[in-house]
Image (tube, rainbow, N blue to C red; front, side, top):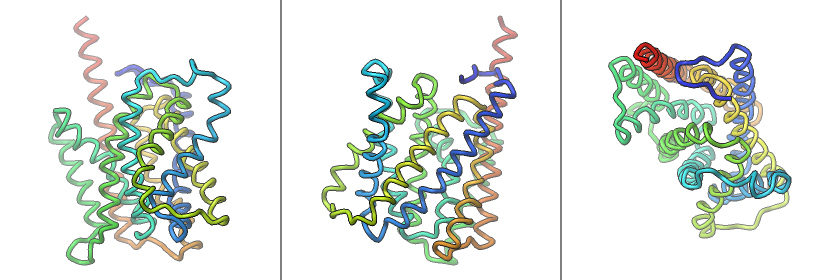
Length: 304
């Protein structure tokens, strides 16, 4: 279970969280590969809808087993909000994956925690000190190293990848709030359902018949995405956030390892450098956030 602010989870809980996080990173690596393979067959919006409907179908036996009480969400508004934000982010992400080298796309998604912090400052009034502000600036510089504006053309697809990170950042904030109140399976069921509902209308404008050879990859994509989000949810409620955040960088070598034999893509040196800069910045921010929470909890304990 998730720990209270200022109270670190026991070591064995952190180890379980690390294992869940490692599984999530490997499962997340299947998503860009599956999307790239499906892109010649289907529009990105249709891939999003079918991927989430298949994921819901996988969860129906569980829903029947636990019944209405087990499936009923505690805070419906959070599920609706997450479905809309995640759905928009997924459309942009899937579309960009069809055009941008996979390793570059994954590296740019490392900016997600940076955008999450920026959104918290702009819309939630969170106060950020000089350390986290500097780390955030350094992280965005890492993104510029990957994009290299002025040296290579910045495509619309690259912009879509970055914009998807903004929507996913907002989703992450909602997800962390949900993880404190909902079971992972409940979150997954309603998240997939609402994403499918939100993305269906735009998908209908460009809907095409699904060829038989695309169905196995749609199932593969749904299973990989479901496993990734379930494992990530489990890691967030088991281990400290700073521990989970420090492992996110592992997605890049996993994707690079798979993309090279399948698509002949391998990230250049600047992509690795930019990704490392972003990963270092986001890891520092996560650790600094944890330190501030601990300091606040210790202060409250002294006042009692």
